[in-house]
Length: 146
Image (cartoon, rainbow, N blue to C red; front, side):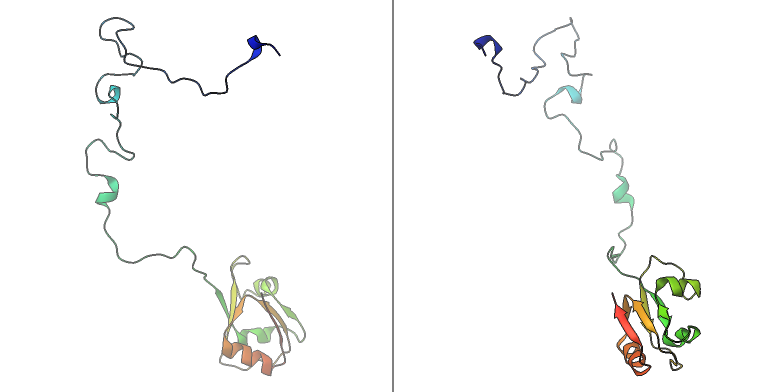
């Protein structure tokens, strides 16, 4: 390697604009149009709408807050589980086939129903209430909460 092949690692120098009439009288000197845009610091803030009342200030100040992390469960009552045969596996797929839930992607919660559960089942759901768990244990059901 020779001295002629050495190169600098420093960043490229910035273009110095506004230094004389480069293209004659009335030139923009590399800054575009005349006016606010050619001055230093002459930029408008983001979302500036030309002086009219901004869109967000026109919106009403509504009370409350919508939690984006809220979990909504599909509810299945314990008495609806009597449709299954003895020793059946109850999960989202089987509940969807029996049309007890409408979506396979949404979590399922089991609640206590009015009638007593009479079948022995293996249940795989995301959540169950305390009273539903007691009713399932009384019916000798195996419960797997994911």
